[in-house]
Length: 95
Image: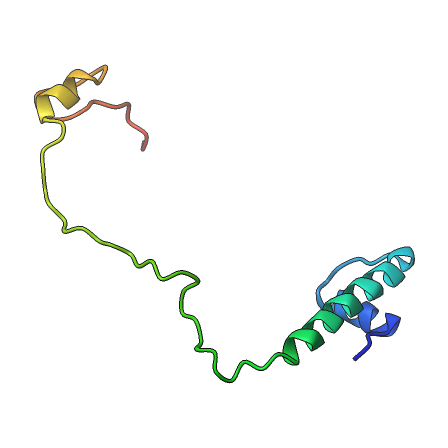
């Protein structure tokens, strides 16, 4: 299958791309090279190849969620510029 310059113009229009006339030939050659490569891939016998779900055999190893204290309230509040016993004080943002 070969792509014509009219095909390139149509695809560029559908993709909402501005394609100057000077680049049409270059784009046509590029698309035709990809199509030749795809034809070569289509000629490969893949009947005995299992479909892949992942590219590697590695799986996600999830850990159990465990709640733990990493920074207690007093230490966290000590890091703030203006606090009371329970919260950080911030300027009002809604009038």
